[in-house]
Length: 106
Image 1 (spheres, rainbow, N blue to C red):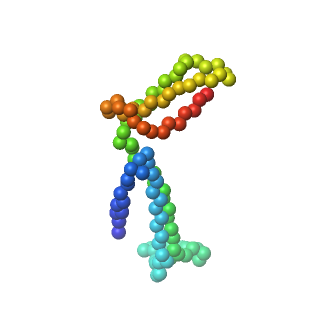
Image 2 (cartoon, rainbow, N blue to C red):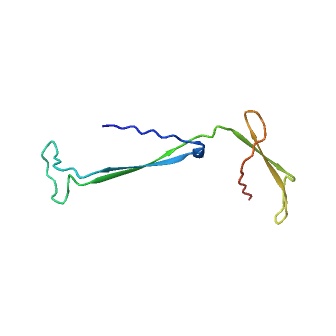
């Protein structure tokens, strides 16, 4: 019958994780359909089977962060050099927080 499996998700799962489920059904000896229907002799009704499912589990971060980019110029010409700062703060209380930021520039 139906089965429930419970497993804890810790802080390492923040942002989401995936669960892979594999179900294996051993050979079913003497398996018969409830009604007679034509079956190919090449099809083994009692053969072992397996089913696979991958489930993505979204896990939101408990913090809402705000990223502020502070540029020293509003426009930079091609080939020039410019600097900027990135500041992260907690939206709940506005206090600075540590973190990693990836920056792409075009």
